[in-house]
Amino acid sequence: MDNPILTIVVPCYNEEAVLYETERQLTETIFSLMNEGLVSPKSNILFIDDGSRDQTWPIIEEMTKKNRLVKGLKLSRNFGHQKALLAGLEAAKEEADCVISIDADLQDDVSVMREFLLKYREGCDIVYGVRKSREKDTVFKRATAQGYYRMMKKLGVDLVYNHADYRLMSKRALEELARFKEQNLFLRGVVLLIGFKTAEVLYDRKERAAGESKYPLKKMLAFAFDGLTSFSVVPIRLITLVGLFTFLSSSIAGIYALFVKFFGHVDDGWTSIIISIWFLGGFMLMSLGLIGEYIGKIYQESKQRPRYTVERDAAPEAMGQQLLRSHSDPAKRIN
Image 1 (cartoon, rainbow, N blue to C red):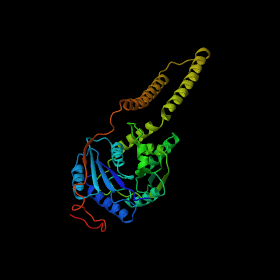
Image 2: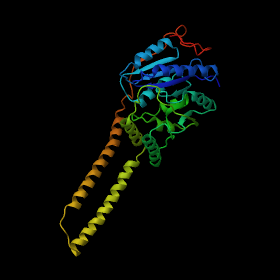
Image 3: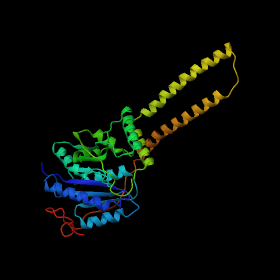
Image 4: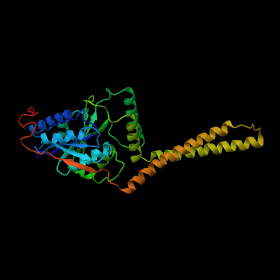
């Protein structure tokens, strides 16, 4: 197999605090892979600015002027992590033989990219980076994450346990991914639908190098709910079952009320009526909300709007004099 052209896709949102360190580590990684003969000298790093409000894009532009490996893509506004990642994957597949996606915070271990490529050379089209454990997470985050994976599995949604978006995809897999046109994008589930030969590589997740997490609890819950409603109709079926159970319970209660009316003594009261009204009213509103969520997704899909808009494209301005590191000596850097 000829040395493949590798593109490392890095979605960024307000990552000015960590961007230089990310560039340094990824550049060293690519040169190391070049020296081993695992990737082509044409390999590169593609940073996608997802509508950042800080200096992320000016830094990316600066890096493209000094480092021939770095390319940049600026989206016109904040479209969200999944769509920014998709923008990078679709841009990279035009030239790359394989793509590795990784977040800019450097919590994923860049050293296992070598193992990704070895699996790729063995014929794997998709290689998943999987965390060995969640010991560094808080008790709450660990419990909610594990509960989420279990719930998704019971609801019929296949996910790779402890895998986020750190993965390698071949050109063939990327071309298949491009055939999925849904607006409500949940790549962790979509990639599994592609099929092809896959493999998993275990690694230890690190602490964030700098800056703050861009996924607070509110966004994490929204992301989890989007994943659930994008891949499973079980929640709607559960509403049907609960409705059936409520109907049967009401029928039994109605028969009992008629029996007491004709053969017993009935005490006037309002407690049971109020409780019943509140219970049924709350259940109906919750059901309408959940059904509305699915209808809203159908509405979004039917409009077929573009999933992202590219505002600017930055490519290396020089291929020789402004190179940060030489191929023979990755440690050299021009400041």
